Structure formats: C-alpha cells, structure tokens
Length: 319
Ligand code: NAD
Ligand code: UDP
Image (cartoon, rainbow, N blue to C red; front, side):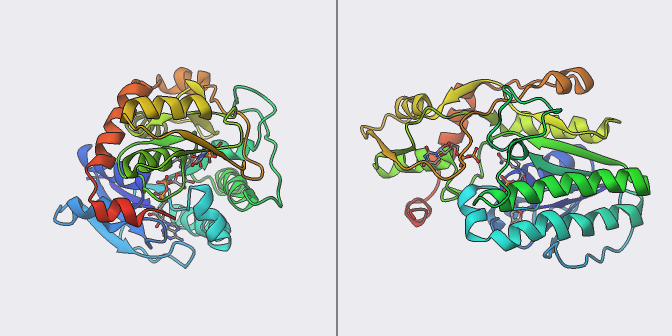
C-alpha cells in the first residue's frame, strides 16, 4: 500500500485530496493544526483504517516514523481575509513549512507536490496567464505575505529538485470552489452564498469589473492527482478557463439562490487582481486534463452544501 502525507488535511482542498487518495487505495496521513481548517471536514474519516490524523504545525520540525512514498503540501491560509489576519503564520508555512516538508521528502526519498497559486502572477499583465509569465506582485502590499511565501515556496522546491535530486511537482491552483469551503473565509463564493442564505445584500468589491475563473473541486483534485503521477517537475496551471466578471457572477448567484436581495458596492481591496484566467494548454498536453464540471453545475452542488449547514453555522459566519 502506497503511503502519502497530506498537509492541510482539515482544510477545503486537503480534505478532498484525502478522500481521493483513500479511494485510490493509498494509506493517507493527514496533518493539520486547524488554524484555518475544520475537524468536521475529516470527521467522516475518523474510523477509516486507511486514514491517520497527525495534529502538527508544519512550521515546526516534523518527525515522521516509517516510510513515505508521496507528500502533498497543502497547509497554508488561502483566503485574503485569513492571510491578512495571520500574515506571519502565512509567510512561515510557505517558507519554513515548505523547507521542513522538502527535508522530509529528501529523508524518505518521497515525491513531493506543493500547492502554489495563480496569486504568484499577482495582478497579471499577461492574459490569460501562462506558466512562463513571471508575474506582477507588490512585495510589500497586504497580499504580499501570501504571494511571496508562495513564490519562495516554488523557488525552494526547484532548488531541492536541482541540488538534492528530490522528485518535485508544482501545481499553480486557480480559484477553486466546492463543498467544505468555510462560509466565513471571505472568498467570493462563500461570501455571496452566505449573504443570499441570510437574506443580506451581496457585497461586490470595486465596480465588479475584475474577473475570476472558477474551477470545481473535483476537477482540481483530478488535475493534482494526474500531476503527482506525471514526470513533469516544472509548474503547471490547474484551473477552469471560463472567466466571468464579479458583477456578472453576483447576478448569477442571485438567480441561482432566488434571493430577493440586491448587489451593493464596497471598496476594492488593495492590490486585488483585475483579471485572472488560466491558460491550461500545458495541463492538456502533458496531463491530458481539462475541467469537466461547468459553473452552473458546480455552483448548484456548492449551494446545496451551504444550504445543508445549520442556522448556527450560517449565523456564526457573519463578520
Ligand atoms: P484552507 O484554509 O481550507 O486549508 C488550509 C489548511 O492548512 C487548513 O486546514 C489549515 O488549518 C492548515 N494549515 C495552515 N497552516 C498550517 C500549519 N502551519 N501547520 C499545519 N496545518 C496548517 O485552504 P484551501 O483552500 O484548502 O487551500 C489549500 C492549499 O491550496 C493552500 O496551500 C492554498 O494556498 C492552495 N490554493 C488554494 C486555492 C483555492 O482556490 N482554494 C487557490 C490557490 C492555492
Ligand atoms: N469579492 C467581492 N465580494 C466579496 C468577496 C470577494 O466582490 O464579498 C471579490 C474580490 O474583491 C475579488 C474576487 O471577488 O475581486 C475574488 O475574491 P476571492 O477572495 O474569492 O479570491 P481572490 O481575490 O484571491 O482571487
């Protein structure tokens, strides 16, 4: 049985990855310190003999007994309001945490895939974003703590690959959504859906002309799975290229949820990227991957998930 360590296991993407690798017949070790995660996301795995949970902060030295075949490093705050609240931890998990995990991969002779992000392109001047674009990031802006941690993460990963011969993979994840996102994580999908469910107006930041391209979680997990098993060690974009402005997206959510509330406009956060769309030519070519779930279908599944939350969870999520 192949053994895989998944950090950030109690988070949105990490918990879906745990499910996928268990389904594929792996023994999964999930590691998390719950700083932005939720035990509820992995509660269904608690009695599964193929799953073991390790409560640990990956910025601290990691002692792992036994052998390991693969590591997926997904631990990191991932939403702007999270990493603005805990900027130092965000920098540390991308730098010290990644260093620890690369050291572990080297010691165990394991292949490691790290979760990078479209955010390394910053507010991009090239559109859509191809992997060879270097990006446009404000190092000292409020988002810099996340963007630069992820850029450092890519650099140290390539250095371990080049200098130590560690087998590394780098996925550049574009906005991904689905069940188990935290209602109060501030990202646009939980924000709009939570507002619709609570009967509040939908808050569009700026004039809403900025764009994003949303990828359903199952498609994202499939791309990550294929990349891990591929022999490609340079960064690969995984995301859904179907781009929409945030203003139009708010209208879609109003239709989907049937809310009678309206859109209200608030200030655009500093350095909020104006456009974002992955070029997935490389993923198609080397992984034979492209997204299968369209936005209408994915949003319906996600809204059903948010509707199933308790009143307590729904109202606790206001901030
Ligand atoms: P999330 O906040 O739901 O999950 C992150 C998990 O990491 C949480 O469970 C958190 O408790 C854990 N964690 C954070 N710091 C830790 C530490 N020091 N030690 C141990 N655990 C720690 O976020 P997510 O959306 O699931 O994102 C997962 C990864 O994917 C992140 O690395 C993020 O940067 C990357 N990513 C996600 C998206 C997206 O759209 N969801 C886009 C780009 C990149
Ligand atoms: N956004 C918005 N209203 C909200 C939350 C977010 O208009 O209540 C906007 C935000 O300014 C950004 C886009 O939606 O332009 C996506 O934001 P998110 O935090 O989901 O992801 P990111 O900016 O990291 O891509």
